[in-house]
Length: 154
Length: 200
Image 1 (cartoon, rainbow over the protein chains, first blue to last red):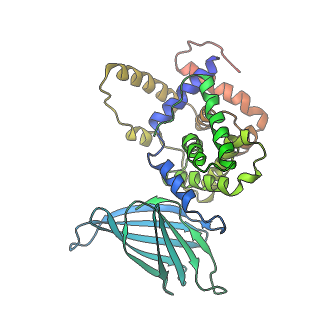
Image 2: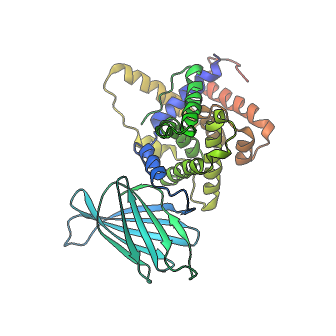
Image 3: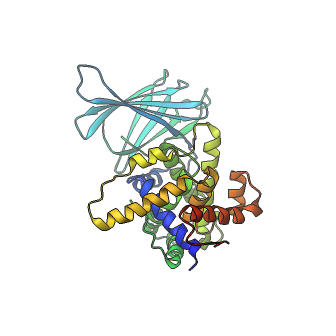
């Protein structure tokens, strides 16, 4: 074995230590694959940012805002804690349009309607690794897109 | 999770071979084999993608998208033995696209990475290992960004696609091999020059 390979191998170990693979990435990939509907080509949205903020004085938990985008479409989620294992999600899509949203988790899917103003809500859902799928319920209308988020932690 | 990489070429080959074996099993209908493939290659994809300067969220997105591309297009992979190369190439292409798309990508700031490293190992041997690691790390930081990216890719990608890497780095393909040798040479010189004139 040459010196060159030893150094590369040391470097691989070093990067593993200094910039390790996120612990839940393998799990996220598995959920992504498991929830994908292979008969449909969704446009993949990208996670733009997650911001945590203290919510209003009357509520105890924190609120999490997660933004996704893809091309001219964007999805904003505002997540409020309901105890430790559940949350409420308020969502907005831009441009505003009627859509059907499907929330997929490991063993559970829920659906909701996005109203014509682009708003929807999931009153209660478990926390954990999640994907959102959105498809226009207004065929032939302004938007006929189908979008999916990557798997992310709620 | 860790990538277990023994400092031994035989083991490096094993990652690629293990991937090829899982891929064959999966294509033959054994659905659990896909999980093995994901566990085996996700760490490799992470490091390849991060070398493009994507932040953590972007890098995770690219890794997920690459896997979906595999699941959708696996029938187009003519040689199952090449599945790892196919995936790393797909991930590199997507990372490169995303890094140019929104202009958000910055070279991975190593001070930020440093801050995430848990320090204070308790056992003496770990302290020694960590000192050696610190020394190597500080030498890596003194390399130029292009060298750092190239070395990170080749450290994890056993069969690098030089043509694609050359395009991404804006270099002629013929210069990648020599550049890789030059970068390793520089690194060794920084480490104290014990190894003299070892070159490709």
